[in-house]
Structures are given as C-alpha cells and as structure tokens.
Length: 80
Image (cartoon, rainbow, N blue to C red; front, side):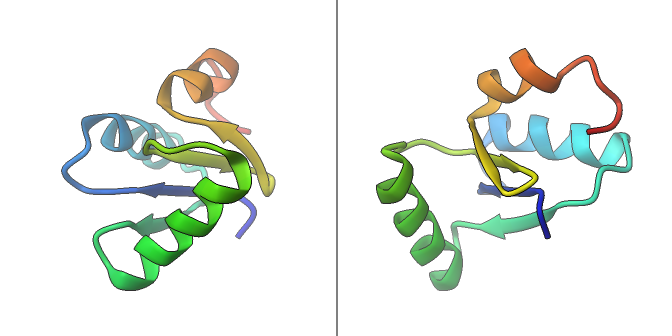
C-alpha cells in the first residue's frame, strides 16, 4: 500500500491523521507501533528518515513527516 501511517492508538496526533484518511476514503495501511512487528518497522523507518516521533506519514511511498507536516501539505485535500 503506497499510503501508510505508523502510529499508536493512544496518540491523539496519530488518531487525527488516521481519522482524516478514513473520513475522506483515502486507502492506507495502519502500522501499530504497539505490536512487535510495528515497533520494528517504526525503528527501521525512524532510523532511515532521522525522525523519532509518531505518527510517521507516507504518501505514495514518500515520507511526509508527522501530523503537522501532513496537514500543512495535504490537510485541505479530501483525496491525495
């Protein structure tokens, strides 16, 4: 899936991005950092992109950044 969010259910910023995707019917993969597999993916992507916080948002397989970065670039769009 070209769009993905690496995040956790307890994170309000993750929930905000996830909600935007769902509300606007934007297909995405949710990677839960609370699972061992998700934590490993987060660690790998964090190291690769030099980014330590969640959410980590990817659009068309390109790393966008976190919640603020995503909404600054795509927040007014109902589709990507």
